[in-house]
Length: 286
Image (tube, rainbow, N blue to C red; front, side, top):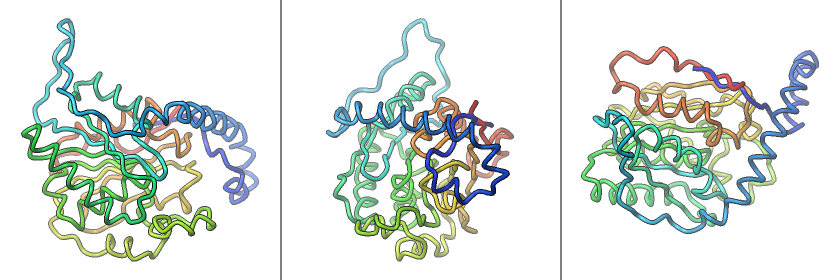
């Protein structure tokens, strides 16, 4: 699976690259900057629409002239946004999932004033229990962007969420902590996303028997991951697959159609223990 598109939009990362690579990436950097700015502008316009929690509605049924897609083993999907964001970031991903047979999709808004990953993970757990009760499903799939992926992982590993979460897909999530923007340490939840924080130390502890299947999408041009590989999951007890995305930045991960295709494939992958799909090695966005 390959994703190609824009690249890193911010110059600080450029200065960390070798001069020879800078020459080769200059065009990609310009494309990335344009893409990230366009996404940011669009998201600013959509942001007010996602401030409130979404209404719980009856799942949409496909049109009569639409060929029915297999729904067996397709649990509800929960979308969890990143830091200082809201559910509006998933507008395009929701549409993509719905068009391909995922009609039970819900987003969870947590407050931008949230100061503790643990508390947000408990909220996620209550939200998932409510979904299971309403839908009659015993499990859900979760897609988390950035901080949202870390909250979901804490729920799975530390709060028994592996009983409820079949597959957890993370997009640009600092699994090993990120060192970007040191001045942001004034916010307590940012400090929890730093390498060596107590929360990340909890996630590095043994997790024998964890039932959840993890798929982590990480971009080689993600300006918020420092180092870039921090968005990969490296834990001996977790069944984890890391998918490298080339050519797009952090903001594009939950928006780009090629990434959406990769997410759908990850959610539709055979259960853990069976043969993995051969396309899940990387994405190149053109």
